[in-house]
Every structure is written in C-alpha cells, then in structure tokens.
Image 1 (cartoon, rainbow, N blue to C red):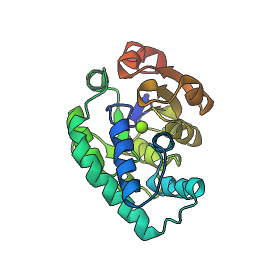
Image 2: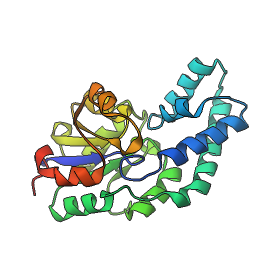
Image 3: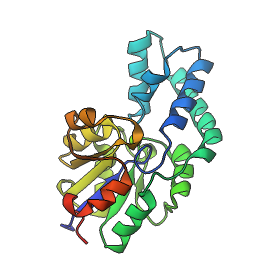
Image 4: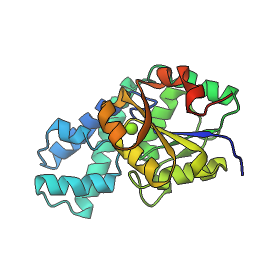
Length: 224
Ligand SMILES: [Mg+2]
C-alpha cells in the first residue's frame, strides 16, 4: 500500500460549478410531485445521499414519500439536470489543480454522491476521463455522504490508507464523512457553504476554490 498523501475530491460545488443547476433540477422534480419546498432548503441538502435527502424532506414537509415517489423524484431530477448541465463549467483552478497533482505524481480520485447519470456530463466538462481516473459514484456504494463509504472506496481504488487522504469538498456532508473515516477534511467555499459551517463540520482548512487550494497545496500535504 502506498504511504503518500492522496486527494479525494467531491465533484459538485468543489470541482464543477453545478450546485445551482442541481438545486433548480430538484425544485422542478419536487414541484412535479406536488411537494412545495423553498429553494434554500433544497440547497442545504445538495451533496448528501438521495435517500437521506428524501428522509429529510419527509421530516421537513410532512409529505409521505414512498419508494416509488422517491424513484420518480430521482428520475425527474436527472432529466432536469441533464437539460441544465450544458451550463456547468469547471470551477476556477479545478483543471489546473488536477493537472498539477497528476504531474506531481500525487494520487487523486473523485467521490460523488451523484449517480453516473448526472456525474458523466460534469466529468466531461472537467475533462476527466472515468476510464483513466478513479471515479466513485453513488451507484457503486451502499451509502452515500455523510456516510464515509464513497471516500473509503476511492482510497481503496488508489491503494492508499484512508488516514493518508485529504478529502476536498464544499458541503458539510463531505466534512462529516471525512471525519467519520479519519480523513483530513479541506473545505472550499465555491459550493455556497460558509467558513464557519465547514469548520464546525470538521474542516481542517478552508479555501475559496480549487485555485486557492492549488496555491497552498504544499501546506495540506500535496508535496511534489
Ligand atoms: Mg459538493
């Protein structure tokens, strides 16, 4: 097993500017099911597993979401997102950061709560080829964030102990999942969560976006 530091990246809001497209897609899907939920409440849940998302909706709205409705929501969200995904672009410095890691021989992988059906277009926008880079999606694990399974699977794909990994994410769900598997959490602000929230959820450092993280890479274990 390798002993060097590896980087495990969340995708939406961390490497690609897609949080608001996801929020809009969920809003459309919920509206179609007759579930009235304010946009800000949806935003707060982006990045967590779809199953937990449905459970939290149930608690907050009192709507009864059965497994069929939950599946319809998922499909409607995916359809709406695919329409909106043409506007998704890499966040500042994302491509450069990944290129710098690759050039420096620093292992990295992507671990997203999204399914491949929505992640594929984001990866394309980012110029990441899933055949060449370890990408762990919701389809591949039993539980998504804030459970640590996605990050554990990504570390295993890189053959790096989870304690040697840095988890980079924009949401509190990423930081909580990182804590649960004893990875180091690094927060980025480009998904809309604030510094205090990310720190409270366990972030060791917080940067504005991948560009700022790249400038400080050597401070968080990214020695080349
Ligand atoms: Mg995210």
